[in-house]
Length: 615
Ligand code: F6R
Image 1 (tube, rainbow, N blue to C red):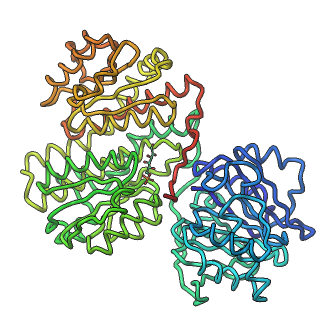
Image 2 (image 1 turned 90 degrees about the horizontal axis):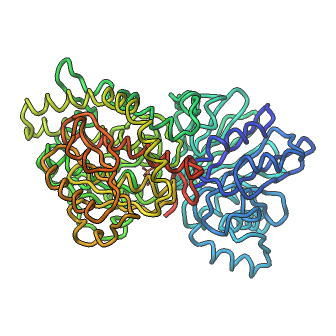
Image 3 (image 1 turned 60 degrees about the vertical axis):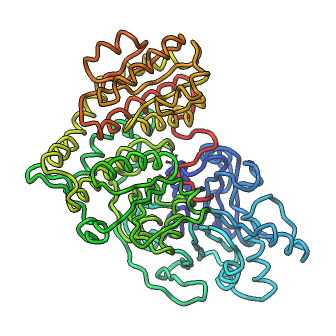
């Protein structure tokens, strides 16, 4: 849940490290730090509470020389976010510095053992325990740094991506990973490290994605060497990253979130490109072709995911049951992994994750695999841990999502789930040809409709946001395919504006939440003209009878609801199962504008991080 960067080469390390941290700030931003070996061979560490910009201000008058260094932007797990607990951490002698993303679960036991041996600690972090352990092994067993790192990693339990710098060996960085991502970039006589490829791509496109239990030895003038914990050398392919800089910059928008909301029509076109073919009326997913029989024979689908990806999963369940006529369950990955779920070899588990690194989802995948299920990943980050742990899958191809609140990943996930349901429904013979053709044409037209919607609704929603900025609570209601939309709208609002918001299936309102409704509680109702329209209409009447203000999402030209609601957002007409792809857009915009009106940090909301690589 932190971002780590490293550099060893011919350039000044500091600008590379700071730029890299800015690219990784989405992963955590409560403190930041950098360690560099300067031109005189001293190991300098500068760290501070706050964001990378605070670190830059703090370091501006310091010695920033040196061509090797490591840097970190943190999302606190152990120890409050302050400059003492910020990374890098030193070993007792001050010779070693470490940065770490992850959690050392047995740190308390190890700390106690080290303290009994006289080691003193400066911070409350699990990370300091690791570097002290490495140094303790190095000095007590008279080993080199690599051996000490290997031995320490045999001892620790947990998740980590680490990089270690040694003052006595200024031409080397040792890095390792287990359950936290780490990428090595290979340039001309220079090397980079990053939690993902974004800090690396402006210098080189050549990267090695480290696997679990890999240790990378990066030495000036040598090729990168990768060994396992037993020092056996491993061979890894060098991958060419297909990411360019424009994709990870704001492109004129004030926030990444607004850029990413507006990118959705193009993202969905990319997501469908080569997959939805209207000329020959076909939806093709290579995973469905490659694993046709396994998927056709599936007796049950189980979707595991967290947060927004779980909401996409709820839509996936309805699509799979409606179109493929096969039972589908949706589980929070965090619950699934700690139950003893009954899994059969005829089950297919679909893991949905934007980052591909969410610790709970990854653990759920491992558990389901052990129990014999076939695992299908739906992820965004190419080469991340979940796609590598699954049997097959489909990337959503929406490009890097930097804003912490997920937007384009959600619509990308729903689009892939729709294509999967269509491709599989056809193979299973559970969808008739006319419905299949209609749906694939409608799906193909969604980006155009989304573009029009964005043009038509943005100003209206900005005005609505100004009116409702001061509300303290919100209720979001929807039914059928729009129930997950209500959940997602509420989640977006609470995470970036810090307004309390609840999503409910509209009919559940009577079973409790109606008690909350009064003139102080705005209610957002997704009320499109589908089979449940009349029922949602009665819900609106019940809400109005209690004097609450209603913001309704309706189909174009719905005069009935226009007369009843306080604010109306019109959506283009589409097939019911595709409505979430359109209805989500105004709710993302509403959350965005309310948060902006409240002066909140939209892209980096408090207490959150983009990639939750710890439990
Ligand atoms: C909400 C949000 C989170 C993520 C969740 C899962 O805007 O971004 O709820 O959806 O942490 O993350 P991934 O999809 O990376 O597994």
